[in-house]
Every structure is written in structure tokens, then in C-alpha cells.
Length: 235
Length: 222
Image (cartoon, rainbow over all chains, first blue to last red; front, side):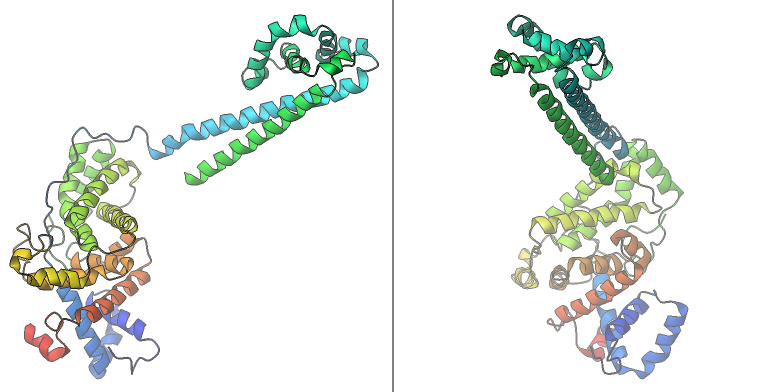
């Protein structure tokens, strides 16, 4: 195919000729091309070749299907439309996000509570015992003096409560859980017995637990959020 | 009812196939009616298989792609919102063909030379993929080696150009429907078809019988 008369836009000219064969040009384009072709041997030759290719392909035999592609009559549609299929996963991600948020909140309270009682409770345990929220840390101090007797019985429920914070802890945020929450550090405090032996309240345990829970909860929250966002984009 | 799919290749005879009956079948399929969906299968399986066969050059793979496409179409039928079931279906088929290319590492199943070698080895060696008893005898005008050469040339085209020119010239679809199937602008479709025809012209020009040089020979054949 030549390009002498169409040095710069032969590609476009060939597209026009090709579309002309298919009847896909506008009336104006068609009229323009029909005025041009009689005086342009290159376009005449190219048109002939394009048409020849088209005719060869159009003459290819159309195969019949080798067999029936009908589906078995017991074929079922998916149980739910695609949009609903992603919903449970999104809910699960949302649950993870909530669990993380709750755990982080509890951790924050533990941290703040321990810092507050660390400041107050050192000098005035009586004062701390009289206020509701701080009573847990006073208990810590009290129990830490008798660790062997009380902690084993409280250990199992404690671990259950802290490992599933979104269920137990959230539903009873006030006085009911706080004793449990403090028993956990106690159980671990037994392993850090030198502090107990020295007679001082186990100050580092509660902040460490609280801080750990805060960081862990925040991480879980972010994980849940990113998963939720990813699923949102996929949907 | 309209012509059987593809029977009017090049004539653009099967424009706007979507009609009330088809939309009703789609609606019933969306409610889980397999029998209704199978009416659609029966209607388009020839065209779907032909597209896969021309795209892949391999009857077994084409049958697999076609069957998978119908299963996929049924599973996704509730998400179908368009006006043209055929365009939607052929898009699924072409995607299935692209998946096969990817799995094969983008190697066409056979080259032009291989196809011609197998053709010239004798009539007994004629690939059943290209000439078999199921061909529509009214359209079986081209000789086996000519068909093999065209198929071989098609397989050497870039995938997008091959799809565009098969839909246009073999299946006889209008540009706007091809654009829907390929999810491409009309201008891109127009360009791909023109480029494909140019490539095919170069490939087929190696065979003087297939592509006689000049208008004299061209007109003498007609």
C-alpha cells in the first residue's frame, strides 16, 4: 500500500477506507471519500486490498457448535447476588474493627486509671478505695498482698474476659468487669513476684497491660478498617 | 426471527438482535429459570463457539471456553443490565479466550506454516477443526488450505486486532456492538479493524493464490 498522496496520515486514510467498506462512515465522510478515490490510485489499490481481506474473512465457513452447550436443568443461580456476597465479609471486618476499638478503649482506661492511682494511690489507698473507678487498683494492691489464695480461682474467668473484650467487657463497662480486669495483672504479677515481695504495689504491670491493650486494639482497629476499605473498593 | 448467527457475515444483517423475546428470556433467567437461559444458549451457542474457534484455532479449547462462558453468564445473569445480551455474552467469550492466551503464555496454537504443512500433507490430514462435517455446506466455498491459511494469519495478529476483525468480518457485527463487546471507543475499534486488515493483507500476500496481487487478478476471481 502506498502513501505518496497521504504521506502524513496514511494510517488515518486507511482507517477511513476500511470503515467505508463496512458502511461505518458518516454521510459527509463517505461523500468526501467518494470524491477522492477516483483520482487516487493508491486509495483505489488499498481499497481493493482491504476489501479482499474482508471478503476472504467473510467467506470463512461458520462452524456449527460441536455439541449443545445447554446447562443442566438443575443448575442453580448463586445463592445471593454478588453485592450481598460481600456483605458478610464486610460485617466481619466491621466486627474486627469494633473489637479493636473496644480493646483500645479498655486499654486506655487501664492506662489512665493506673497512672491516676499511681499518682493518688501511692499515698492514699483509702481515698482510692472510696471512688468507684479506682477501687479496682486498690483491690490490686490488696490482693497483691495475698496473691496465692485469690488469683488461681479468678484466673480463668479473667483470661476469658480479656481475650474476648468485645463481648464481656463492653457489656459491663462499670464495676462488674473492673475487678476481673485487675485480677489479670495480678495473675501475671505473680510471675513478677520480686515486686510483690518488696511490698510495693505492682505499678508497671497495669500500665503495661493497658498500654499493650491500647496498641493491640488500635492495630486491630486499623486492620479492620483497611480490610473494610479494600472490600468496599472491590465491590 | 432473524438469520442464524453469523450467517450474514459481512452484511451487518444481524443488527439490533435484542428484542422483547430475548429480554423476556433474560428476565426469566435472572429468576433462576435454566430452561429460559438454555433458549438463549441455543440461540447464541453457534456464534459463541465460532468466535472462540477463530480466536483460538483449537476446537477443543474453543468448546471449553464456550461452555465456561455460558456457565459464567448464567451465574452472573443477575448483574446483566444492558440492552444487548449478545454483546454481553460475546464479551465473556472473548475474555475466556484471553484467559487461554495468558495460560498458554500468549502463544498461538499453531503458526501459518504449520497449518499449511498439515493442509498440504493431504486431504486426510485436513484439520477437522477447519473442515469437518459440521461446517455449513453453503458457506464452505473456500478450500481447506485457504481456510487454514486465513486462520493461521488470524492467529498471528495481536489479540485486540484479531478480536476486532473476527467480530467485524467473520461475524459481521456493526462497529457499535464491537465497541460494546471490547469495551473500547468506536475510534479504537475502527483503528483496530483497519490495522488488522492491513496486517492480514501482508500475511496473506505470501500466498499468491490466497491473495492475488493487483486488481487484474482480483477482478478475475470475482
